[in-house]
Image 1 (cartoon, rainbow, N blue to C red):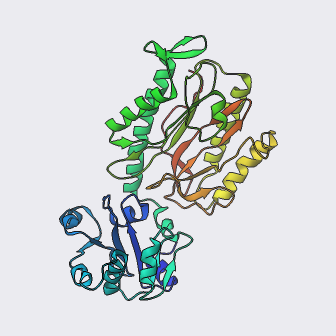
Image 2 (image 1 turned 90 degrees about the vertical axis):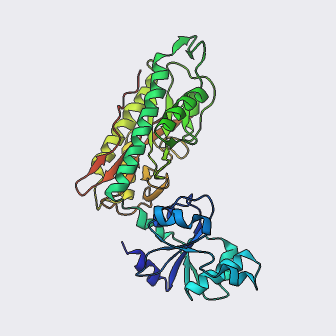
Length: 376
């Protein structure tokens, strides 16, 4: 993998420009700074990243960020404001004063700022998002941060499974505290656990019955016994911004034979894929092996069966490089990935099991530390 400096030089640029808040993974990774408002970040070959930000954020940034800092006043804002009132042109002139360009920007760079910068020099767009490749190989510290988020996910999963396991069953419906146990109640209780770990969960999936045939159906209404319940949780750590990701399919009591058959097949596919992963193997090869496994057993069709990729990278984004799909490239030691095979049928339901781990020279080092039993 080329260095970030090589990426800039190979593009024919003099500087990489970001303009984003810390909700942007590239900005968060490059600066380790947390801010709700967009700031400008410049990275020149051979230099550390430099942030242009308001005076009110300067002292905090010097304490918390790994990037250099420059206040807008120091970057010439007040002088520029005397002859220019358009905020994007002001921003562009501040950038120009620090670098004549050419400029390399990400695909989500503000269009108005791109147009203003073009008045000074050529703007190249990192259309392949090559900058994200520099986040794909995780440091030991990043792996610790992801592992911490994963332990929070597992604690929340404990809560969900406990609610299902200890619920009363009345006419096939699960009951808790003298009321039907619903997807929303389980999500609420899981979110409370995550908050205790200083993590946040969004769009957690708690789907039951035929809802599970739609991989990303969030789930709604009463949970029922003897039916598949897919729970997919992907929290982020509020302190570091790093995600974890895990899925389990459970059932209160034995589900139908068809669901059990799907479960055992998916579990076998997951373990097979874990055994394949190592540095140098491509994500495409892992994905194709699982497709072939399902196909040989008669589980593939155009619209049902295995209808998504095998997995993806996890870090400051829940879905990032590398990809374990038909287009997946070579896996590298230090990649943190999920493996999540699944099978989905409209008249049966769906099953998905997902583990998180680190790609190593010799194989897949599982971070997830959780049972894969289905029946409670």
